[in-house]
Image 1: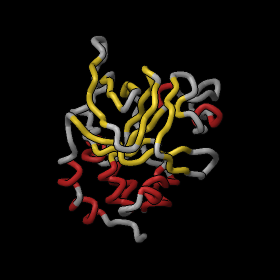
Image 2: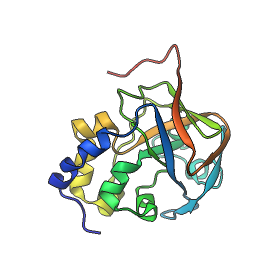
Image 3: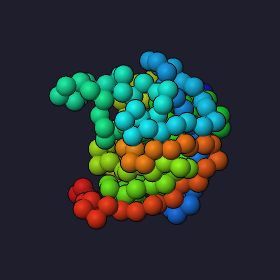
Image 4: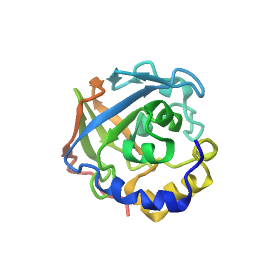
Length: 193
């Protein structure tokens, strides 16, 4: 697929802004069993300690953590499926190249989901992290330099086009077709300014 231009990305913003704010759905679930490997699955178990069972989040670790361990604030990454469709096309197999685990039709913006918000997805509950999910060289190589710049723009950051980092607070099964809703906001959560 030819990478989208900035003009094409801007033209798709209205569609993304019309994602559901209160009740959305899971359109794809992806496991990352190895480096640059992606497996679309109809359902996944989300575990408070292990993350998405079958995914390499824990084993991969994080070079930015002092001890190199997996970052608990980036246990599960969730991406807006409307944006994935815009940059990658209609097929979820192509969305999976972004490297996120859950692709949802839901408003992931900072305004709709400030840090500390809990979202119910299937049986599981996730808490939105204040750790930004940003693009990288791999994202640019897969979707183009314009897409990387776009996710880092003010609109891109506000809408969390690159996705949102979450941590699992209630374990459970998530299936393609499950609903996604806002469950609660932690009382001590603060919105980063």
